[in-house]
Image 1 (cartoon, rainbow, N blue to C red):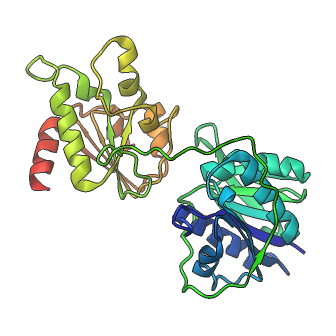
Image 2 (spheres, one colour; image 1 turned 90 degrees about the vertical axis):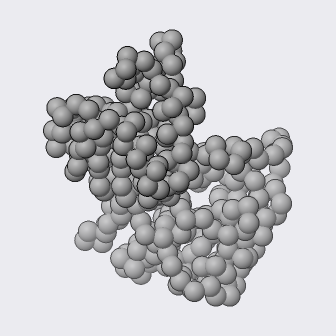
Image 3 (cartoon, rainbow, N blue to C red; image 1 turned 135 degrees about the vertical axis):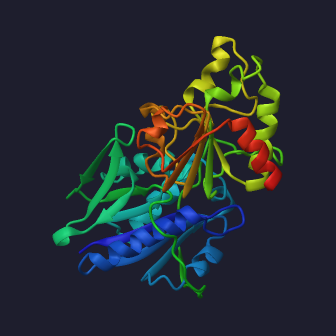
Length: 338
């Protein structure tokens, strides 16, 4: 008999974020598919009661909470102590948690303390013939593996964007307090966020806009127009609230002494050596569509590209639509229409 624990931490406002609600959907699916399984909820935060009420109608048999000001901020020692206490209190054999930076940092250590096992970047869960099986990708999303373990407890960190977030009415939940040691040599100072208007990475955006190295090359007049390119791209991002990606070649141009777009960093990088986003739509501009870059688009549902070369990699079946056009002219017109 499996005891499934949905493990989550609260946000600054005391609620549960979208990745946590997605992991809750995964945990509820497991509880329905595994015979005689029970579902419990484990929450950590300064006051997890509002979060428990937010998901009070999810069907969990128990709601457990570790509360206190020291558990409000991300910190390995307190996060690990809270997770360990919740797993022990629930007697959990399967632990499903969102793959946030807080849990990804500490749950491997928690599994070690409890003599368990952990698997990260879970993208799917199935229960064929009563056996729990999870899927994840390897080798930059080129190979998909199916994993099953008989060892318990088993920690599963679910990647965001792989499950529909749980939706239900709030309900009063009977939260059981769980004590956890809060000693820590780490002191939290403050949150630092970029100034308004500077944020270009938006995981929940409907559109991923990717800039290739062509933006910083010589144009038809024989000159480089980096400042104009930066203005066109930032204007487009502000008007559409799209997320910005980049090819490795564009990010690394600064190391070659070439002009670069000032707002790009390796965090924007998409592809074999970068991120693999999951936006509904993607628009690549001035990218050649070669394999190392396109591998990052594996989970983009609709792919379009703008390139002056009709024989680029995007035209070889890698894009749903290829616009053979000048990206500068296209973006000027798009911004005008927007």
